[in-house]
Length: 187
Image (cartoon, rainbow, N blue to C red):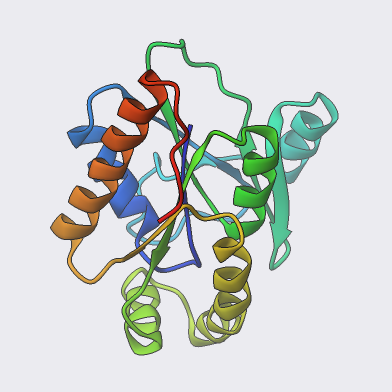
């Protein structure tokens, strides 16, 4: 299991999409959310569901982890993939803690923005309003500190190609280490 975590706006979705295309045997677990789809956001970014459907899934034990942020629910569904692939989770720091507890051998990569200004600009480009951006930036510092407690590696998303290549390399190294019976180590 590979966990890509970091604050909102660092490019987790873009990096995750590229990793799935470029790393053989990697499957993306699509998170659920009750929030509305952003303008120009793909229908595949999340499983967009009603609050009632989400709450029913919680009651039925269908999530590895879930959390509430700004009045919306977000959750990582239990894996339904076959064992021949590695599962990529694109989640927040709280989720990364939950997954690391459940799956200590998981590879956790913290994705970071090069700067606060860059983070703000990325959120503007995806259509977030200024109040939401301010709330996310305030939360980002706490999320980063929390994620560092469980992250095996940190990658700054300054250049998309380089960030994807770095994380792909980490995945291949973790697979190699696991096949030799070792652990993934921390970097």
